[in-house]
Image (cartoon, rainbow, N blue to C red; front, side, top):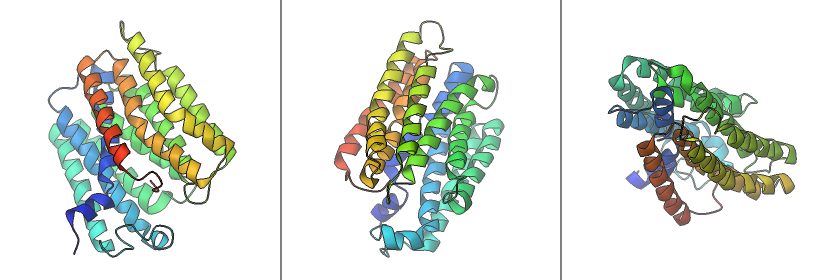
Length: 287
């Protein structure tokens, strides 16, 4: 019998914390404010992200039976049909929440959902995987920015997208190892992203953007350099895990550059919760 815990494991529930700030980055960058619809848009992001996690395991059921037999589907705790249904249901919920926040947000959510499904069912195991995943993250930011001023969110969306692409590239070596070149490339992306964050910061927000950029780089860069020196599967897993967790410091820095104090405070709180969860989770698991 499938339990709520099995479903939470299927969708990797704690990882949803890494997307809550995407739409906040988009809204704050576009308009300098988030508004009451911010909660609905963050919930939409979380639903579509969790849908992607369920679809990931649906698509990888045969591979997981060999490489990760403890996962919910190969262990028999969740059926493939149920995983597909969970993915479809969460996708519909995410799109509904986005349209509830506004038609412009809803239209972007359709593109985001299509990209997530395309990644999991078609692109993930191909060279197109990292670019498609990067597009997903960029669209998530633009879902929050949709409406007046959306072009001002293009740079933040691009930074989160390239970070995501780099992390996804390294993640492909979590089982059999990565390469020094790929890990070095990811490290270069981190340095470039951190250096770009302060540019275009609103008046009075430059210092916060610089501090945020330093925190982001400090959380992501060291394990990437370790993987570049020793491109083992264990180091690739650590670099991937820290890259995923580094999404929140990156979001925090990008909101800080807009001068949105409340949004920055919210994301700092999310960082704190993420650290607490990280300490309780197994260090060797595949992301």
